[in-house]
Image (cartoon, rainbow, N blue to C red; front, side, top):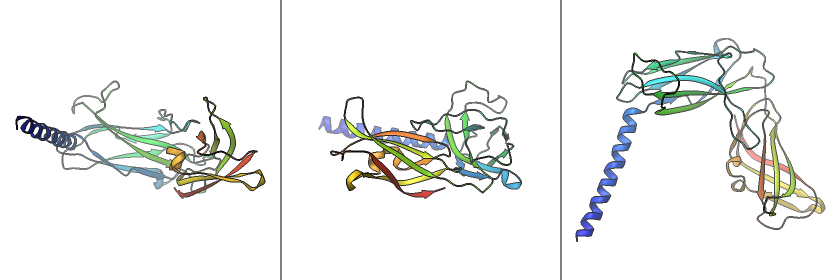
Length: 249
């Protein structure tokens, strides 16, 4: 009986702690919308407006835009891009129950060769109204939105190159090089790869086997390389690949 009471007490304490954590998060965090913005390179549509909705307290939030690229491993390097974007205001103290707005404006070239991809970042920082949102501050909450800039005449072109290969342990598989050689990003949903071998043999790499790359945002100019272990014996000889996916911009 003593142990049962202790177990019930422990469960009650755990639930109370989780509820308290959820309540604290709702008090201190904020929401950002929209999470994706598509900008033109000129005119009124070269400006995007993001809205901050605060909770009960007055969060201090700073804003910035960073570049967005993809490495061959699928990681996303970012860098500051102050020269091509104006962000105003760059920070704000948001009053409870009110909505604050921040605008970003494209100031780069009017005719980019391909779509320009960025991240808009809203970060809550532990400062008061009379303190600057300087560097080196601990970030409490962060929202990261997608920003795309184009002149409206661009399009994606997703392709794949395939070859049989071995991993570092000598296990057989397929090496894929998935590239977007087009001029616009494409979100490939439920992507799979049909392989055709000499002599008419075939093999399919399923969406689940691709992991994150099975539902992935392929930016223009990116080239992702990934090794897929074979789940069964592969046919011999060279192979060619064909992508299957539902696209979303």
